[in-house]
Amino acid sequence: MVRSIVLFLEMHQPRRLRRGVLDKLCDLRVSEVNNSVLSSIIFDDDANKEILNRVSEKSYIPTLELMKGLGNEGFKVALSISGSLIDQLLMWRPEVIELLKDLANRGIIEFVAEPYHHSLASFVSEDLFLEELKDHVEIIRSLFNQVPMTFENTEFLYRNDWGVIMERAGASVVLTEGVDWVLGWRSPTYVYGTPNSKIRLLLRHYRLSDDVGFRFSNRSWDQWPLTADKYMAWIRATPGDFVLIGLDFETFGEHHWRESGIFEFLEWLPKEAHKADVTFIHPSLLVKEDPIDYLDIPSTISWADVEKDDSAWQGNDLQRIALSHVAAIGDLVRNYGIEKTWRYLLTSDHYYYMSMKHGPSGEVHNYFNPYKSAFTAFKVLEDVILGITCALTGLNKVKSSHRGLQRKHG
Image (spheres, rainbow, N blue to C red):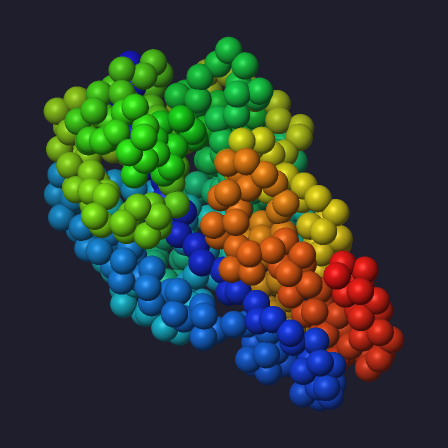
């Protein structure tokens, strides 16, 4: 039966894009194009700041403050904070960074590395993926004085070849999803190896994770209310060595409001874990464990949607076209020194908003989509891509082609 729990939290907010920026970008002279000017035009930072302030007050600050006290009860957490969120916190809510530093110094938080901009860089090129990982390792080292040995790709995206690249970036442990069609008869509650690298794979137990992430506030769920003692009893009774629970950080206070009892649930978890003889551990503690088996994962998996593949971001033509267009201007933006702005355009959220799925997965996509339309999300990003190209090349035909695209898509 399980004796250890690895709690992983993903802390991320994108820099959402502003609508209708094509003409402003095309009106720029090449000499005016730099990261500062582009940022002021492209990013909807009034909305981004408002959202960050709300989430900081409702989720980040109260949860991190609660964790201070929980550390005395053996609580530990693995946490990945995207570079795009770090950038925004440093601008608008630096006190959150200070709380994270404090928790790291107390040994409560172990940081997990990921692509800096929570991006789809792994779909673009090996070199870009490696650069994004190394950039994130460096910001974690410089801000929090930790050098991560545990890595994840954005949204737990994983394939064999990506594992090799993460190992090159410094990974000894990689977190990904316990996908049924990968595991077969096996359980996600053991350490696994890979056929082409020395990394250790830790797999998220998605059912136990979703009990908190998705079902906690659902009063029609037959297990509602979910209490800490009930949850720890489930974990303790699970066959295996450990359980990896992976959640969005915003689960606490934002996705499930304070009134749901989510903070009380978190507060009582270490107490009930102690009673159940379950210990909170950091993932790096498992780095020297011999794998129980080796997993060959040649095609993409992730923790997103019921499909648990890459279809949340690359499942339709709009998503694939948009990413190919962003990738296509990579060399151009590097030549003009605006790669930082370009990398924000690779953030996974922009493509997530373009999903046209139905059913439960579609409901989740629509909940997070600030544009409420896949076609609007596509047009917003295309405006930016075409506008930057227009500004750097002076080609007015870019605007004409975009108008034709607008007519085609209504």
